[in-house]
Length: 430
Image (cartoon, rainbow, N blue to C red; front, side, top):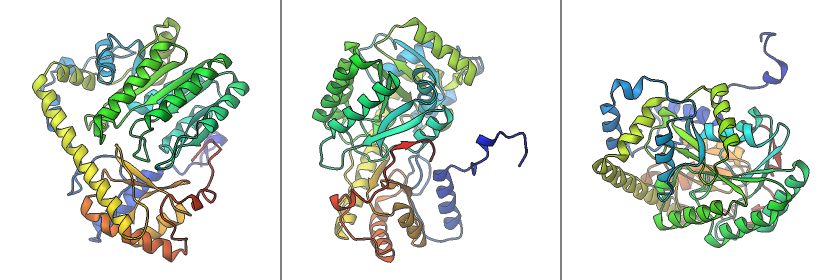
């Protein structure tokens, strides 16, 4: 190890755990062994090939040199930002305050840099997308969690409100990342009454200090119930328009347009016009990545001017949302057939299965050729990459793994497990 590397940066293994598990699954498959790979976070067809939405790529191929090569404005093309925001709230006449970012991840990172001081705590629900912890660590903040509701149960509003109040009293401000609807990794969404109760709690806490609610959107195009998504967006719009709490959104083209590698997204504050916030975001862009790629911005603008391409895209997104529904229901049925509770799903690429000793179970599943991502709360299963025909094998392997480890065969999500799961508390790394 070179001495030039500062001590605080010497404890990493350099591998993302999800990509590492995916590499193990691919290595086993390359040896001719049958594998169920439920680790990936990208949409695959039943042959295991990456899904690429044809109308998107057709438009990409039409881009001219001048739509690709020039620098984009440092904070992003303003028409792009408005167009991306209106994909979520069509009634908007702009994006308020915001900037283009390298995917939704870039938006999350900039929110930490501008809305919390180093040493403060970010609040989010557990389980959460693993890189949340990495983002927090890289920006010098802690990660405090509150429980995402179990299937069929109400949100513990008292705990959410109480934790938020403690943070406000300790640090004078609050940043809450809320991944709803189509929560990653549970695949579920908040019930409307729970969502409204949470927003009311934030209203009541607002006198204690500035609060920012950042909505992390990624999977809305792959929901079981489009009306429920529209309902959630309407609730957030009404709340944002009040101005009591600053409402932001992390937006991305990665999943919506299967443009993972384009790294196109935005951080927007649709109901804010604060010039100081806009200036701070612009400086963060310049000092972090300077500006984002021009090509995906140009692509989105072409898409919004092409009704035929929009119709084709909507049809393909609906098709893949139906495929995801079928995969989730196949897994749900297979788990129940093995005497376990099912896997409820409302949208997105994942479901979460609650088990004791999830990291040990994950290792044991590998012996059965089944790969998932372990979390303190259970197993993240990527239905985006697991075909419905593999659901039966998955369920049998899970049951066998639990028995091999002598883990109690409670139904998944059984309250008897709640006390045995690892609590996250304050997390600075993962």
